Image (cartoon, rainbow, N blue to C red):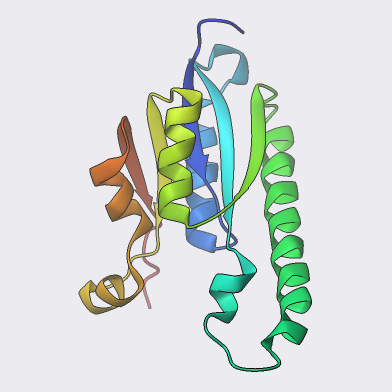
Length: 158
């Protein structure tokens, strides 16, 4: 439908990501026909060379295996996202798989689609893990040219 704003939702293969995605469908696309947004679901597929890194001789033999695994993951994530949209009767959506660092991929998707909102899940890393691994949501909250909503999965009580 013309005139709708765009919402980009970043998904990976984590429970946190799909919790955020399901939460978004429930709160912004329920019922689907009254949704104010066109939904763009983006999965950032890691480049196989960045997974292997600076491996020594023989690493070229591993590259096709890593690429196949990353491709399977992307296909699985895309299929799960499509299934969730279909289950919730959401039809105004697209799914994109883009190779690259998730931080850059999400910010570029915002620009490409002129998104009003970017939705990301939070892995709930502590300060140390966040410093070592980097935080996609933290990066995007500072660099995306739109509002960024970070959806946290509730912690389970023991």
